[in-house]
Amino acid sequence: GENVEQHPSTLSVQEGDSAVIKCTYSDSASNYFPWYKQELGKGPQLIIDIRSNVGEKKDQRIAVTLNKTAKHFSLHITETQPEDSAVYFCAASKGSQGNLIFGKGTKLSVKP
Amino acid sequence: SQTIHQWPATLVQPVGSPLSLECTVEGTSNPNLYWYRQAAGRGLQLLFYSVGIGQISSEVPQNLSASRPQDRQFILSSKKLLLSDSGFYLCAWSPIGAFGANVLTFGAGSRLTVL
Image (cartoon, chains in turn brown, orange):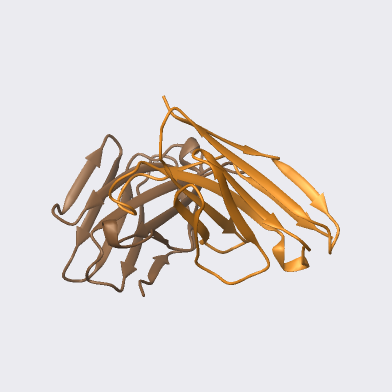
């Protein structure tokens, strides 16, 4: 079955710097890749997603890139702010043929 | 708009006691419903999912069970809790249709501590 690896497990950056979180997946049939942000004591919330027919997607300070050949995708956060501090999860699925498989999460800390 | 409610938010239960966590979704019909568990330092583990009333699929054999008595109600249960059942339980829903490919919306979670 699908396996999603996520790195790093923890990431600390200074306010204003960029943060990059990387994920790899094992099943070449996966075609949907969302990213979730989980604040302390809350449920995860979708922040951005990408499907396999595009290589990059941006939404203000957040961007996701997808390399289907290498089977990896990344989350990029620019101009980080303290409120970006949270745990971020990547996930992958084969769309209608499978469930979302999540990575183990990255705890991002943005220092003011 | 759609909303998802999950309760209780926190509970502390003794080993061997029963469990019932409830989840309801408003503002949509025929949602796909999910129960996830999040243990400390680990990712989100899918426990159960349901594509319709009375239809439950289990991803991981364990001490827990799920039921969907109504279209927008999903219940997670146990007859006898184990210490290993402690964790953060999340209910989620996605729109009917392309199962797995749609946006998952999570509830606020239920923190279970088994002593």
